[in-house]
Length: 226
Image (cartoon, rainbow, N blue to C red):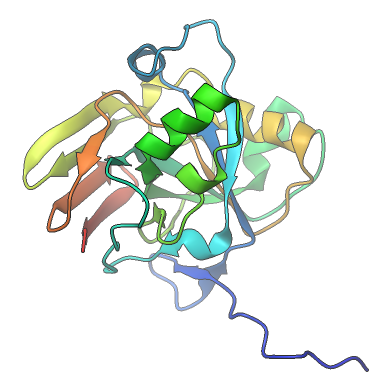
C-alpha cells in the first residue's frame, strides 16, 4: 500500500444546526452577478447570464472565527450571500430535480480583493488571487432545509451600519436553476457548497471592522476583521 510523504490536510468541515455530525466540504463554487442591482453596480448588463468561479475548501472560516485581512490588497470587500450545501450530486441535473440534491442552507460572505479583481479584469486574467485566498469564505452553521431556499431578507452590516439589504427573492437565477446549471459544468458531489451571489451595496473593510450578516430563515454570521 502506498504511504503518504506527509500527513494529508484535515478535511474542512462546517457545523450543522442541531446535529453533532459536521458537513465535510469538498469544494466551493460561487455565482457571479446574480442580483440585477449588483450587476449594474459592477458595470454589467441585466441580460448577462450569471457565471461561476471557485474558492478552495480551505478558504472556509467557520462560525465564531475571525477573518485575517489578506496581503497584497488595499481594497478588501464584503459580499453577503446565501450558501447552498449539497447532500447528493450528479451531472446534467434537470431543474425540476435539482432541489433533491440540497441538504440545507447557510449564510456566507464572499471576501474579495477588489483591487486585484479589477486589475485582473483589465488584463483579461483569472480571478483566483482576488477570490480564492485564505479565509475568503466565512460561513455560518448550515441549517438543514429541504426544498427551495427561504426568500426573505439578506442583509450585512459593518460596525452596526447596514451596507447590504435585499431579499433572496431578488436573485435572477433561483437555487434550482443554479444547481442545474452548475451540474452542466462539473459533476456535483455531496459536500459541495455553492455561494449564490450578492446583492448591491458591496464595499470595503478594514482591520477592526465588525461584520454581521443574516439571511432570514437561514441564520446569522458575525466576524471581526483582524
